Structures are given as C-alpha cells and as structure tokens.
Image 1 (cartoon, rainbow, N blue to C red):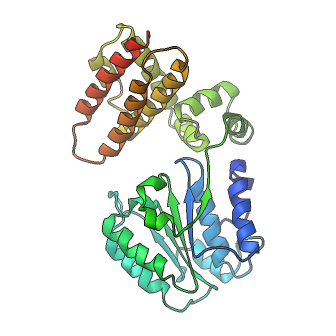
Image 2 (cartoon, helix red, strand yellow):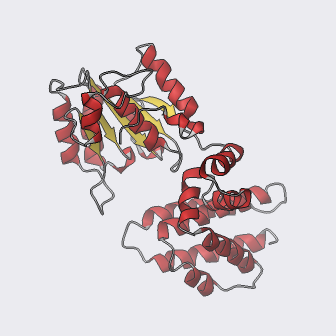
Image 3 (tube, rainbow, N blue to C red):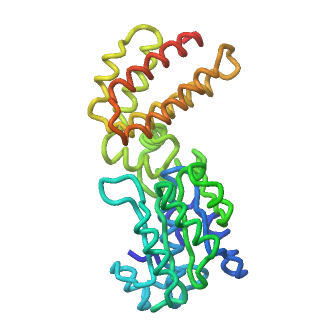
Length: 317
C-alpha cells in the first residue's frame, strides 16, 4: 500500500531520519544512492518504502506521496514500471547477480511514468560478492534519472567501496522511554506488558509488538530464568536446550545476544573478566548467522551454554 503520510506519524522515532531526507530533497542534494542503515526492527523498511513512493509520485508534497496519482496507483498495485525491489528469493538468503544486473540494465532506460526510476535493495547485505561487485559498477557510473536505496541492518557487511559511494541516513533504535510510550499509547499495551515485550525484543518496539501478539514473551522470560539458574548450578545445559526447542533458532540467538549484553552491563564495575562476556555475545551473534547453514543447532547452543556458565560463574553469579 502506498504510504501517503509521513512515516514519523506512525513511528515517531523515524522523524530525524525523515527530516534529514526531506532536507536533502528540498535542497536538491539527494544523492543517486542512499544507504538507510540501523538495527533490525526500527521501521527502516517503512521509511524506505515511503521514500520510494514519494520519489515516484507525480504530485509529491514534502517528499511524501499523494497516494492518488497514476504513479501511486500503479505502485500500490505492484505494477510500476519505474520501480525495482530486490530481495532474496523466497526461502533463500542471498540476492544474486542476475537480478542485480537486470535491474542496472533497466535503470539505464528512459523513465516511463515518473521523473525518475527507483530501486530498493532490502537488505543490501544479502547481496553475494558478485552481486555487490555488479552494483558497485553502477555506483561508479550512476544512471542519470535513478535513485538506489540500500536498506541495511548491518552496513559493516557491505563492501567499504559501496558504503563510501552512498549518502548515509541513520535510523537508530529509539530510547526505551520513546518505545514504551509508543507501545502503551499507540499499540495499547499495558505498561508492564510493554516493558516485558520490549526487554524480550532487545529494545525494538516493532519486534516487541510481534512478540506480544505471538505470545513469545513468556518463553523469553523462561530462558532468562534458566540462564540465571545455570550460572548457580540449579539448572542443566540439556534442560535449557530442550526448553527452547520450539523457538526459532534466529530468535533464540537474538535473545542470547541481548541477555549477554544485559549481563555485561550489570557486571561492569563489579570486577572480573568482562571480556569473556563480550566474546560470548559476539559468539551468539556469529551463531545467529550460522542458523542459515547446515550446522547442528543443538551443538552450537550446547557449546555456547558451556561458555556462558563458565563466564557467569567467574563473575560471581
């Protein structure tokens, strides 16, 4: 659906990024390639699609699409000839070279309806090496009437040669205060529900909504309690592994990463080797990426829990 209102009206923490975009658009300083980056779950996709709609709209106002012109109607129906959306194929995790090459070739043609052509890469870090190299050639010799929007949850995974050729717009995670206010006032959660869901979601208000709706918050709470018990010898590693068997591996590793970070913050100033907790969090982040491979998930989790137990006991529980 074409977004004909400013995205910050739906998600208030997007206002700084949307204002930065509007300022560049108003001053005719918008680059041919934008890098929209920030943690997953901040609403970057909503922001990116609002940009796409506004850039293609025939009657935009302050960067926002009108929602009624022919361009908006076609975009809403998924049939806009000047719009290209590159994502991993269903069930896959990479954006391959062929669709990137085809998109670059199409961007060189004359526009059909809108003033410009627009391509969105979501997420940009899903491009494999060959696809990224193909895109780099387009960034070095950009087509005249095209804007490329690269949406990235982890820009460090993009080649520096691509990052350096894009105009960056950051979308940080909102503060807990802003996120809680939105969850209570706009979503309708009770304060306690919002607090627990936001904790499970690692500070992401959109993920918090999903966890609440899917009733996943109790599973997060149980994992937190079991990790605490594991550090004191009141729980076993096999029991912890079994307790998360029905939770998606990607979610499990996200929870373990955020719980490690939480334990690290609590341990700062208490003495002990907090560097181990840093390594354990990094290990959780790496293992989250490995869930997309054929590696044995239970073995990864068991090894991580062994490290967690040793580190937590070393910090005096």
